[in-house]
Amino acid sequence: MPPTTKSVLVVDDSAFMRSLIAEIVELRSDYSVIGMAADGVEALEMVRVLGPDIVTLDIAMPQMDGLAALARIMDEMPRPVIVISAAGSSDLNTSAVRALELGAVDFVRKPSGPVSVDLLVVREQLMRALDTASLVNFGKPDASERPSPPKHRAPMRDDIVANRVVVIAASTGGPRALSEVVSRLPADLDAAVVIVQHMPADFVPTLAVRLGQLSRMGVAVAQDGDALKVGRIYVAPGDAQVRIRPGPDGPTIRIDAADPMSGARPAADPLFRSAAAVFKRNVVGVVLSGMGRDGAEGLRTIRGAGGAAIVQDRASSIIYGMPAAALAAAGADKVLPAREIAAAIAGLVASHRRVA
Image (cartoon, rainbow, N blue to C red; front, side):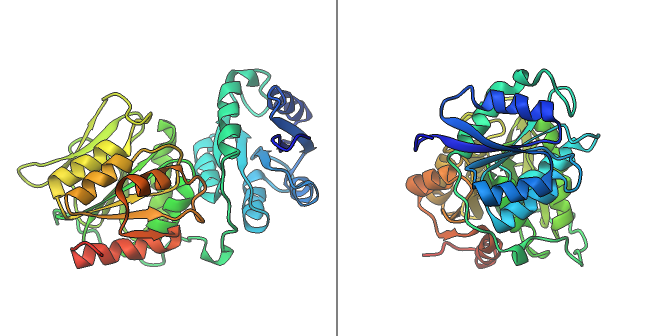
């Protein structure tokens, strides 16, 4: 295999689907299928023996399903994984979000069920996923640090209007980073939190539910007109732009169908700029793993208004594009691994000042 060719392991319990996925992958000369596995157990062994650069992985499989196999791969032999699945049931979105949280690079939906003879319909999406996977940076995560639901949750403080806000941008690799950050935010954080995660619109409610399971704060998908309250996390809905606007009773969420910005809708830049305009120095902007440069100009606006900036470090970012662009454009008060960002957010919110 030429040195520029990426090797791919295809995992699916259907022999027909394995062959079809392999055919699509090898339509490009820069990818080569080096093996095929029929279940999670076989996949783990082939990853150990063959060392593929990229793995495509079904979820609904016998012996060991795809989510269990994905968790093992990420713990023991981290590498880019693209999930290609119909999940075999109505819980597809839950499975997709869980896979992304575990570290999958992308989730490609089989168009017509577990055995999709029309898989060519999603060929371009699969090719984009492979190209993204080829850029992935993986360090071995500490399995002992994997987030788990909190034992105790704080009572809601819905009556307190936020005078500080934390705005977070994330894209590819974001769900894994967000699970690290959100699970560690303190229940008494004296700020509202607004998150923009680039993902399909129908995955967003499931992401909000999952983050809510991990968080000591209340989590919900943002709605137009929501008042920003202390101790609440608002997740931007899909396929809309989200901004913060001043109101007679305090800042509120504004959602509209404006054009994509930085190639995304929702995009972080308009949220970040609006947060700086409304909250001035009382903003903490955070840029997590992702491809592209969304959030970079917005973070510069936040710092220009006197707010603080945190950027995820290269080692813990699945894709270092957005953090690198933000750091180049705006600099940062803190450059940290995902697991340390929540503590930094809490410190900056509590200190109410810029850190040198």
